[in-house]
Image (cartoon, rainbow, N blue to C red; front, side, top):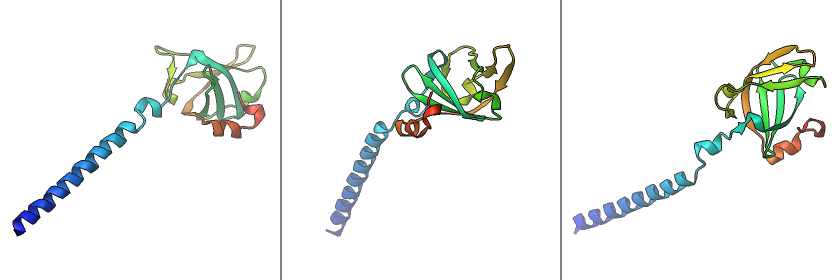
Length: 137
């Protein structure tokens, strides 16, 4: 009789483990996919940019998302009104990480300065609302 109660308890433990494992699989299915964690945007979809300081850019995309681009060494010229931000794409025009950006800053006379991105972050609605109004792209 003791043997049967041990077998019964082992069966309950096995059933509980199966239940936990199946619940975990459901939770993993509900987790965001890799693509959702690293949203991308098209270089051709930029609709505006601003720079609140020499090492930060804010970009607005065609679908109204705002991205923060952190720069390695930045440039004080980013705040000048006559400057243009240029991005070259080789192959795909999608930007999913800092490595996908090849940025230059150019003025109206043709002077160019290369910028190196170190991070690309899509901002939440609350983070965009926290940007001072004059720096919202």
